[in-house]
Image (tube, rainbow, N blue to C red; front, side):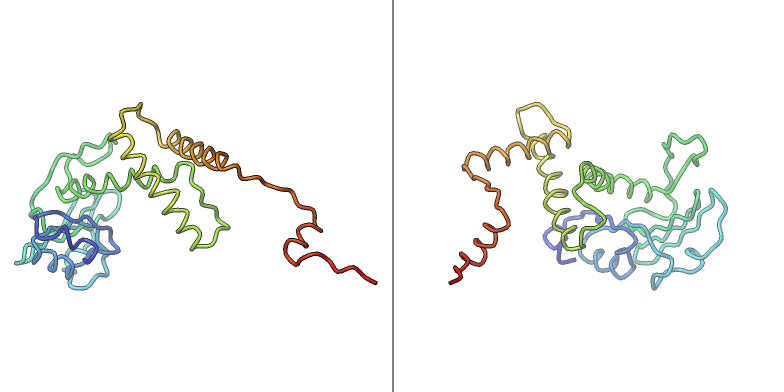
Length: 214
């Protein structure tokens, strides 16, 4: 919660995946006037077993709401979708606008809220994969650095460029290419000369000139 400290107490909604969603977190956020909507793992503590462990057929659902306003959902589509929310009641349903002709006609409102709230993050993650510098053989700490520098930072910069620049909007690939061109131009403008060393000159550069034998 420390990461969101400046955003609490203002009636906002926090969207989380099943790694973070829990009843204790929902209670803490509720006390800070903040809603929580997130997917849920069935093995979390303090969950109603009659909801998360019940066997459902496609289109069926089970839900339970606590006195504190925490709603736990289990809705069966192609698989069980478990949700926790403090934003909607256990009875709110909305039309399912999926293009899939086999999709259910309605779905819980908390799922629609979650999909809407997470959409920008999903798009950001998708854009970061375009032209990614990550490789399987790269060690994890290098992957983290590449992801922050060449992934998240570039995607954020691309968004700001298209939002505030008076120039033509660019795709993420075009923006990456312009960043690379600008970096290469800056390097060339500093007149950095690259020398091709032989094995001997490299040795001398590292260890000094070789002593002459008498």
